[in-house]
Length: 162
Image (cartoon, rainbow, N blue to C red; front, side):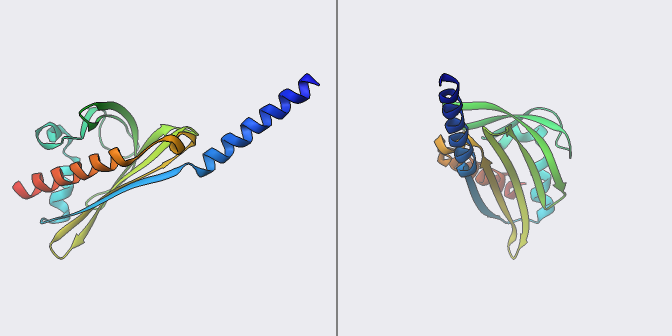
């Protein structure tokens, strides 16, 4: 009797976690127009050595931004929330795409993309990040959205000032 009750409770918990996992999908998205060609925007984006001069959100602590490499960023969401985020560089298409991802499988994962597209006035830069996992259901991505807006504005200011 006790064994079957334990099995029932275990199955209910596992089913609940599976549902939370399947429902755990959110994203953040911010676009900005930059008055410069994609190659100039790209040059600033991948020049992580100079992030401290202009980037209020991301600081590369370890690694190199090269496809397949692991990197560690300091992410400043706001004045009270600074964290270290390990990531892997998944894909690079120069002047078009920088794709990184990481997280804890099943709990909280992220797929982060910088997308550069030519526009009439220069470049449309999009920061898009998809999240998955059980914890996503209990997490508010709005502060991250605001941080990425600040990041895009900082990239624009840096590129247009060069």
